Image 1: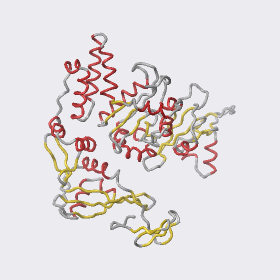
Image 2: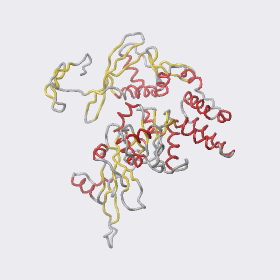
Image 3: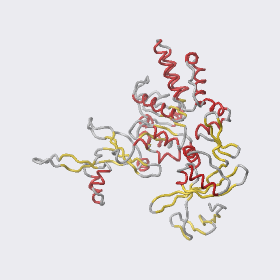
Length: 468
């Protein structure tokens, strides 16, 4: 593995290297960490001692020898597992080794999400690449909203996790051959795109090497690492296209110029892909656009009628911003209420709207908790402030009781609909730091008073919510 990265990117992703057979075990043992815990975590393994003669003696060795070690973090920054890439000359060694499944569920995590989550929210978009070094290279080019699966094919659980941050994904696949869709990288592109469409994402694609005279057979890391000028990078970024309307449509048009069975296969490929699109209105819009460029497809295929067709006909009458909001979160704010659609009927989820003024993290019994201050606005114009803990959103019945105690505020949705509201409102809520004592704060280097803080030669007064 020959890759060039500066120390900043290595430290950002907390990467390491397994240099010797017992280096980690010796350091951990000296730090008081027992071998049973290390083995359970998948950091050491037992192998037959080569110096053993008569008895079959086993010795403890590091699990990741001659490997670059990539920690996998959850969204709070906790290390939950490791994936380690082979750096030895042994051709039989597996390319990647992962922490055992007894430690974590790799299909429920995304590599780089902790570092990328703020950038994804800000851009309302994520880039999806194949491996850890691809993530690193994208970050060095300023594309910090990049993640990858954890050494596995993209899963339903990973899609659900990513959907909490955005519903727009651009896939940047490995491009293993100069032409065609039969190479592994572009096969993975097709598989990942279908899964993302199924989970309600708007999917685009950006192929390494497209628009360039070199780098046709390459991955994002190699391609971007060989890029020398900003002009080259900008030109390549301009080749990002919609997966169905442009990328897949161009492939199908080329296939349809062949024999009768190739023409049939092209229609089937496009039809099967469109039917994976979860949002009926979006699917129908894609069908119309594809049909303009490919009239034969419109002649041979009509989208399947869905039970929710009437729902999305109503939704399509909304203004574009409101329609996009509904497709992303499954509800909108309308006339002072939260609204969704169930089959052919519009449904009120609540007789109020609310916003998060701020969210504060605090620790209790060494566990992190969060509480938020809500400004709740009734449809008839009056409002109230209330404090809720994050656990209050685990059940619609609990949430309903909390709001009813504050007045005539009615929550009418179910648990799944409450999850949709939580994902939109709480994951983008402003975060605040709770100051628990007055006087000099050595951590943040300012003076704390009962009505504000003195910082950088100026007094900053708190607002009516206690925020500065």
